[in-house]
Length: 140
Image (cartoon, rainbow, N blue to C red; front, side):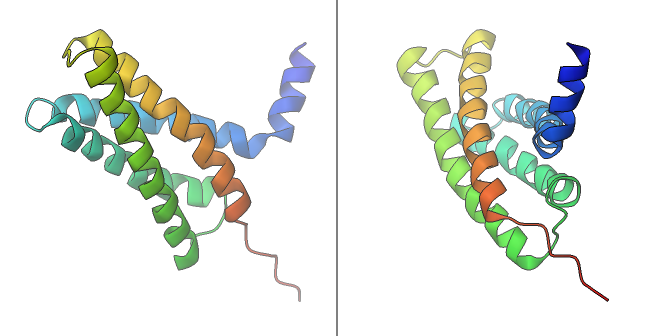
């Protein structure tokens, strides 16, 4: 069993590194969002968390997952980020307002934020995987 897990991790290294980075970014995003709710409206606080997460994730994944740090990669990250931001804000708003009826409870926050992180995570990973390619090695 352990050998199969190790083999899977080696086979899917990029996804595993992306996942670990995303977990770190998620914690950062959640902290900024929750603290932001003390001073800002819901969607503005969520946006602050997502923007902080985007900058951190771009910096780490462009080097560790995609090995591609050029302007085109940044532009693709930015476009996918904006799409993910719209999706995340829509999900967090819908959950908090429609499912939890505007509740400010910790459970409502965690459930809404969790939903707004999970769906964009997978969607953006696969979009970026196929859209951002590592540069071709230069021959001598």
